[in-house]
Image (cartoon, rainbow, N blue to C red; front, side, top):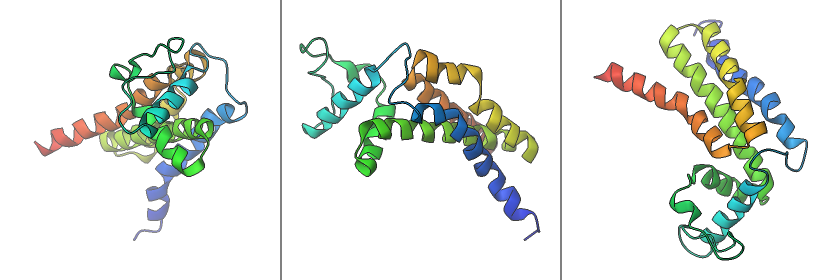
Amino acid sequence: MARHEPFRRWALPVAAVIAALPAVAPAFTVAWWLNHDDVSYLIRLEQFASGWRDGGYPRWCPGLASGKGYPLFEFYPPGLFSLALALDRLVTDQLLALKLSLLLLTFGGGLGAGLLARRLTESLAASVAATAVFTWAPYRLCLLYERGALAEYAGLSLLPWLLLAAELLGQAV
């Protein structure tokens, strides 16, 4: 093993953590931040959890639309809520679980961007830069803090992994 091998192996995950923590830290300093979607994600998460507690996939949300119910999860992406619900089993606090989900997605998106850059450029410096640039991209931060479009934020965090998978499949063919 080369002398710098441990550094090269851990540089990208460490860079992703260093980039993600301050990017998501403001979410942990307040109960919930003002954004365009306001507290709707907290309500949706509770409805999602309630649906699972009732014994099945939550297609119908009885607590929405002034108590009349609404088929939210028939058309709204459930991935973020599924991740938050899994984390809720560990921390037993839905708000904290949702915030931790955002932290994991931020870390994962940055790491995916870095791995994609590493694959395409074979440069450690470029991959660390890609991690930071993707994590701190103004559009992503706007999704998180201004628009509150958390499902879109989650989807965008998965994009580097999708592109990396396409690159790997393209090499295999």
